[in-house]
Image (tube, rainbow, N blue to C red; front, side, top):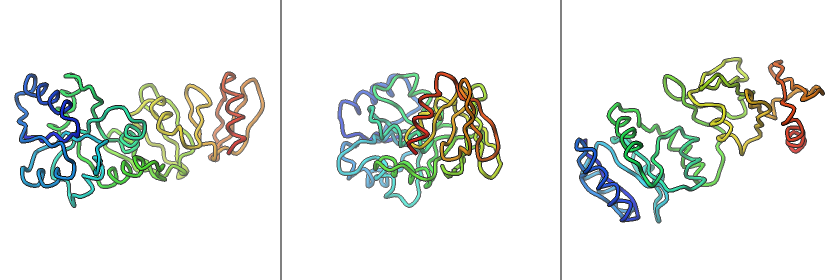
Length: 245
């Protein structure tokens, strides 16, 4: 397995090189690149099986670099220090990444995904990631399911319901989709949209609420006729949020 490491910080490159050489003998490093503007030519010349790609770099960020390729003939492992929008871009697009400082365990898991070809990036995922990284919220979101990805219009989502470590998405076309994410993960992804977690088991699209019925916590009637309980502890915050849309 041949790779290239692309990062604008040399100490990050050297740390990753040492970790790979010490723990992962099956990985051969073909080259490293500090300048994202020359990375395209290096990838085309060396033809790696996969690349480690930093996101926040001067001149060309990681998403911009990938956009230069007509077709991605290599797998990608994103690496990034914490940046709110970089992380959000990755999560919105259902992409895999390593958060710096990279641990041997996380690196091993990422390499296993490359081996099993689970880190392939579609053009739609790349487009979504670029949109979010440019500080825009997309109308469409990529959601991971058991058999791949589902690209869904945000406005078509009525509500999410928790099912253990999974989440069921209820859509306006009356189809349900089971997502391989917890409701807490989904809540984080949709925090900047008009969604509100009215209960531990329910995250609703406030624009799809048809009626609120008073009570201890009360309940909401969604556009599909489904009645959902509002937690007593979340009632005030829900009503305040609902009045703002």
